[in-house]
Amino acid sequence: MRRSTVLTWCAALLAACGTAQGIEGPGSSDVLFVRTAAGLSALPVAGGAPRTLPGGVASFDLGTLATTEWGDDSTTLKRLSPRGEQLASATLEGRLRARLVSGSGELVALTASEDGGDVYMPAPRPRTRIVVVDETGREARYALNGNFEPEAFSTDDRELFMIEYVPPLAPERYRVRRLRLRDGRVLPIGRLKLNAPGQMQGTGRTQVHSPGGEELYTLYTQQDDAGHAAEDHGSEAHAFVHVLNLEDSWAHCIDLPQVFGRGSASASAITTDPYGLNVFVVDWTHGVVASLNPSKVRVRETAHLHLGDPDEQTFATATDDRLFVGGNDEVVVIDTEDMQIVDRWNMDGEVIGLRTSRDRERVYVATPGRVTAIDLDGNDLFGFDAPGATGFEEVWQP
Image 1: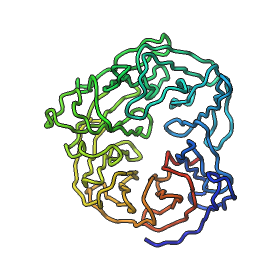
Image 2 (image 1 turned 45 degrees about the vertical axis):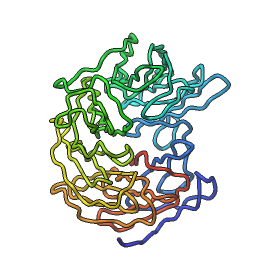
Image 3 (image 1 turned 60 degrees about the vertical axis):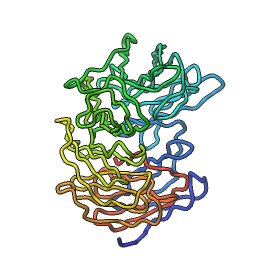
Image 4 (image 1 turned 180 degrees about the vertical axis):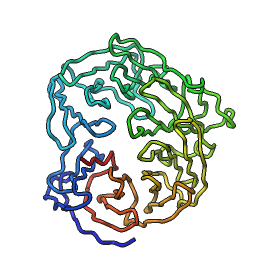
C-alpha cells in the first residue's frame, strides 16, 4: 500500500491541545464520529477544533445528535445537528442518560443515570423508568414493572422497542418487547414465520441498522439455548442474526453456521452494503464470512477464508462490491461477488475501527491514536492523530 500522508493533526481535542490542519478535495466535508473514554466525539476532516459530545447519542443516520449534562437534580438535554448547531434544548427533572434518538430525530429516549450494566446484561432492578422527549421539549414518563433497556424506535415514532431482562433481579435471559408510547402498554413483538426466539441467553451482542433505518440487525453469539428451533444445531451453542423490523413490528432469526457461536462477541462483526441488499457477518479468528439476504431472511452464502492470525476484535464495512474486514494490523479486502480476498492492507498498528465514507470513495481505518483515509485501491490519502479514540461510531457527510 502506498504511504503518502498529507494531513497531520497535532494532539488536539481529545488531549485538548493544538489545532488541526484542514484539507481540500474529496473527504474534506466528512465528520468522523469516534468513541472515547469520555463518550462521543466529532472530528471534522477539514480541520477546526474537534467537539466532545457529553453523554452523546445519535440517530442511525447521524442526522440528529443528543447530549446530556447534569445539574444538582436535573438534566439538560440538547439536540444538535451533525455540524454542532443547537437545534433545541430542554431541562428535565432528575439525572437521566440519553439512550436513543429516533430515526426522524424527533424523539429521544432517556433512562435513569444510575441504571448500570453492560451491553449484554443490565444491573438488577425490579422497575425501569423511561423518559421520552419530543423536539418541543414535551416529555412522557413511563414507570415499567421489570428490567428493560431501550433498543430502537419504530419508524413512525409510535413505539419504543425494548429488551426485557428476566428475571429482573437476577438477569440471565432476555426478550424483545415494545412500548406503545400513547398509552404506556408493554406488548410482545410480532414474529415472522414463528422463528423469532421467545427468550434468548448469551453473552454476545453487536448490531447495525439497515441503510434506510427500517430494520435493526443484531448478531447474537454464544447462545447455549437460543429459545427457538435452530436448524442443524440442536441444543449446541450457536449464533444467529436477530432481524427486528421497525416499520411493521416483527422479528425473525437467521441461524448462522455453527462456527460463529464459538468465539467471543468482539471476534465477530456485522455490516450491510450501502443498499441494504446484503448483510455480512464475519468471524476473523475462524476465517468465515456469511452473506445474508435480509428480504428473504436467510443465509445466502458462506465462505471460508484465511483472514489472518486469531484476534479477539473484528471490524467490517462495505461498499457496493467490496467487503473490508479489519483484524490485528491488517485490513482484508473481499470481492463480494465471488467472496474471494483481492487485497490486504498492512497498517501501522492494531485496527480498532473501520468505516467507509458516505460517498463510498474512502475507507477510514482507526489504529491506536491515529485515523488513516485510504482509497479503494489501497492508497493512503491522508491521516491524522486522534489520541483517545477507541473506535468509530460513524462517518457523516453532507
